[in-house]
Length: 566
Image (cartoon, rainbow, N blue to C red):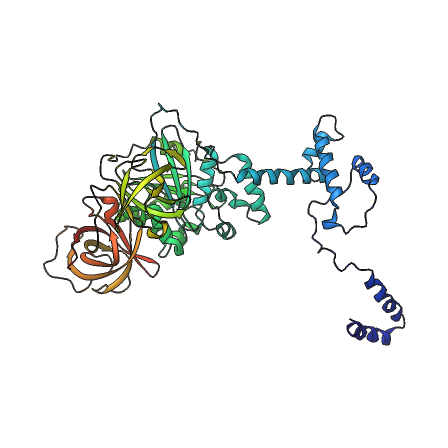
């Protein structure tokens, strides 16, 4: 200590002779320091000034010598809270004023209490959907996946819809808004309703597929909020494979639409993946129309539309029947539930009423049970999540888990976190199973009815369209296969023939290679045994995509399964 002090002291001595006096006082000053004092944490809620009625109570208290923690001793805090309680009663010194002007200390303490209460309330997950009366007809179940380039506003629109349909209350949103402001992310607070984990909130990017529910008069919707970032496309494929309806969100802001749509942008890739994942109907939401660079301009809207339509046509959507464009703003909620005055040129229904008016999807509930598994975890038994593609499941039913043929029994069924006794196709289910361990299940396994098992194998013939690949593809090429919820390494073992795009004729000779934009029939062999069906028997489980190096290379459909040679 002293050696460190002396250097500057002697140095000052040369300059002026007054230095030794303070130096002599130093050790005594140090002796008076409390070494065990708690580290000083500035108190954000410290009073700026003490109003007169609080000074009386502060004066009564003896000044305590105890180390003061965070600038207020505990007793001081208590009086603050008490006075806050008193203030709320009518006739309290400054009742109304105190509540409006939250910068007074009582307000701050009260606000802290509120946050505490909110946190406590949040811990109890209560499904917000009231159970319908038993005689009510069951609403049709529709899964909507939000897809599009990163930062187009998918999660924000999802959060806004949940707020508009009353699934998130105002108070929770205000809390999110406060927390977002603290992180300087004011415009992200709506997306926090869907991006729930810390990593997603810090980065402002969705990683996992978020889930939420909302209801309209005729239908019950599940929102699947897919990630837009290209590193998480495999997660997005899993989300799209559970959807019936896709909402492609594009940003109308100058520059953002272009980056999302050019080569390497996610708008094109997602639209294509949605089509292969079996989404029949696509709604294109032109978001951020309220942006100053756009200002609800019809030209910009038409420009986005003109660029998208030819591409969506190429992917296989029919522009007249399958695609519906609409302008909106996720942050302000314009044109999601109610029409907007700023946009007189758009005459169609706003987003939520449009979803409600869509025709029903036809699903066969009498088919064999097929439930591809998306996720599994342990919770008082083994729980699996997935979307029921066909057939119906009821409690205590015996099912078989393919491909390892475990017989399991359904202990309980949750459809969108509400417990039911039976489920129809198209619903997102959580099943608690008996007779199988969580470790024995992998995403991509399938629950089937025992009398009609799904096919499993390693080798199959498929028709593939090469979408994007720089060089040629020959037999022996390896890629990652995404089929329903299953992800597996595959190898193209043989190219059987090329298919002419226009006429559908097959070539007589075997091609030596295929390149971009060609259609071929090839034999593929997976690294492990996977469950799949032919496209003809079961479209949802016969469509697939091939990816490599983080890009989608090809889309295809399974034509026939090749039995294994022993």
